[in-house]
Image (cartoon, rainbow, N blue to C red; front, side, top):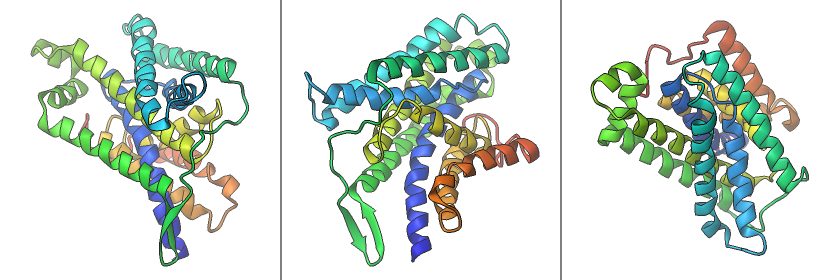
Length: 289
């Protein structure tokens, strides 16, 4: 039963990594570069919620979530408009380097505004539910339900709406999609909005379960990147499976390793996938499937 508890904890943690990885891989699927500033959107969502819950506003956390997500989406759209669009005719390496620079800029801006100390929300969701030896806290349950809701919405968007079909078409071939009359500007904005929303919501939930620090985006970006590599860059559902796999592997590793080595799993996955299967497990599937 001990291992079952670890698997359950891993699935819950992996659902957060999946939220991060889905946003990261959507950007890659359309624009063909890894946005390393995506990690700072995770942190920005968490810190924005902290700002709205602090004096003088002092909103309840559930009401602070919407403006926090809105602020993160605005930053996501601004980074595209001010940084990535002017460089879109350059190479992918140019965009990659720009995203790394933007990551440093946003991280230092967060640290300047909120400091480098560990912070936390004033919420208590430690109480939980017991099924024999299995314990799931209300916070964990909230994380899992939120992830399921958002990922279900994403499935509906991709499979049941014209916008979702347009997203998949642009991911397959942007130039051909433009020739066929698909509004590329609208699709591009949608990608950034979805990626920033998933990052912000995941960041808020993660901060509720742990704490806030300026480096939280970098740490979780690495795990999201490992999930993307595992599932195949540009493959949304591969990123979902990869995120859950990373979470389960991390928590199962606690049975044989010190908890301080949990982050080692993500680095190991990145190294192995880059060496032996850089296209990911689902590399035979292309585009946002």
